[in-house]
Amino acid sequence: MAHRPLPDRRTVLRGSLAASAALTLPAGLGAAPALALSGRPRAGWGVQTGDVTTDSGLVWVRSDRPARMVVETSATESFRNPRRWHGPLLGADTDFTGTTRLRGLPPGRQIHYRVLLADPDDPRRTGEPVTGTFRTASVRRRDGVRFVWSGDLAGQGWGINPDLGGYRIYDTMAALDPDFFLCSGDNVYADGPITETVPLPDGRTWRNITTEEKSKVAETLAEFRGNFRYNLLDHHLRAFNARVPSIIQWDDHEVTNNWYPGEILADGRYTEKNVDVLAARARQAFSEYFPISTLRRPGGRVHRVQRHGPLLDVFVLDMRTHRNANSPGGQSSDPQGILGREQLEWLKKELSRSRAVWKVIASDMPLGLVVPDSGDGKPNIEAVAQGDPGAPLGRELQIAELLRFVKHRRITGTVWLTADVHYTSAQHYQPSRAAFTDFEPFWEFVSGPLNAGAFPANALDGTFGPERVFVKAPTRANVSPAEGYQFFGEVDIDGDTAELTVRLREQDGTVLFTKALRPGLVGQ
Image 1 (cartoon, rainbow, N blue to C red):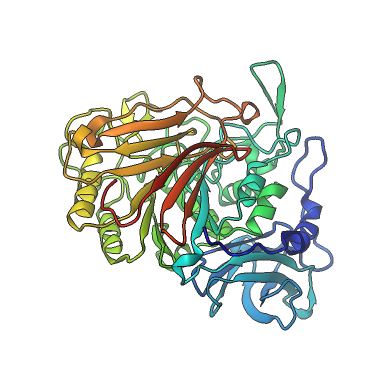
Image 2: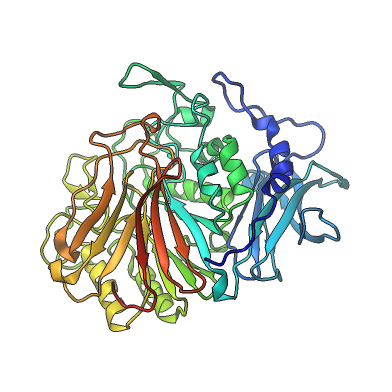
């Protein structure tokens, strides 16, 4: 694959790591350090970038006090003749977070940037700059595209373990020099408290870094914000954010397990039972802690298209905000489904408009894997597949409509990527094996978790004819990251042939499964 030469990352990250050094926690357990309120503004939570296109990018930062955000960019690490961008005033209304849009950037180039936080009353007083880098998307096919994806971070009580070195999987992903990282949801577990210790089956003890906000389920806006800050205590994640742009979507655990609009919780841990109230608070915190421009607009939304040059469009779905209530899924009519009618029509339109060779559909839940929701004692379904291998029912009806649309419009190059189920697998969907046959074959790849409990493989539903070509999963539930079973996926689009190769990898980078797909085909 013809790919851009690598910059000297050590120099790029030096400022970022130095600025975040005050967040390094002691070897023993402890809470997050208090934010100092003297001196100059500090950006100790690192920097992030998102919404990166051929000529723009969105830079994120968090201050420890009110500050004016300023970004400088340069073509080199020396920052000679930098270009300056004046960003927003960061205050308590956004938990001192903010973003600045960089426009007019050269395509297919490495952009070096540094964020300065200025005293609102004295712009000459600035804190230590925090540096990062990202590549803009190329307008040339021959440059190729490489990205990684996964999901599920700090779930089931498995948090930042100093004995294991924290979230080391981010170092492995960064070593592949991806153009971006797609996080397929469950960026936090707002419903999953983190305790200081957890006993392991072999008699050892898992130790967690803890914070006050992670000591209970999140209900208040401050507690949801604290969940997002928790993961940024990990130096591997901060260093990764400083060099790899992100495409972020959400799933259930950003709010609470298996939630849907209108739900009233029966969980005794919550004093606030109205899920719509919790979701609004979670959504605000989510929009504050990630660089997602569509969420910061009036009536903001999670679903969007991220275009990455002529080879790739990424269609980010939101299977939470617009879904109907979880049920057994046996209804023969289901116009709302898991996407909602408006989002489904949006997706059809954008797929039809796309001229990219590959159309990656970033789904926060799998299609043909049966994901139950038995939290209230009823045999409800959490995802799409409801276990009946016959004709589409329930939410399957909406997916059938979409698959039929893709076939009849002859939309080529669709690939589905997801996480959610806490193992890695590859499913091939084939109409000759299916009850519903009006679609072209396609692939769905599953990865994750990043740092969470691993679980056995889910059952397959035969409605769309899935065949599990590869799977790696434990045989028991909630296996800790100390035992492995932490995964991510890599997608590599060759600049010369436009062939798309998917590699499913373990935490240390070991390749478990590889599948190469040829461009220009409706189904394969």
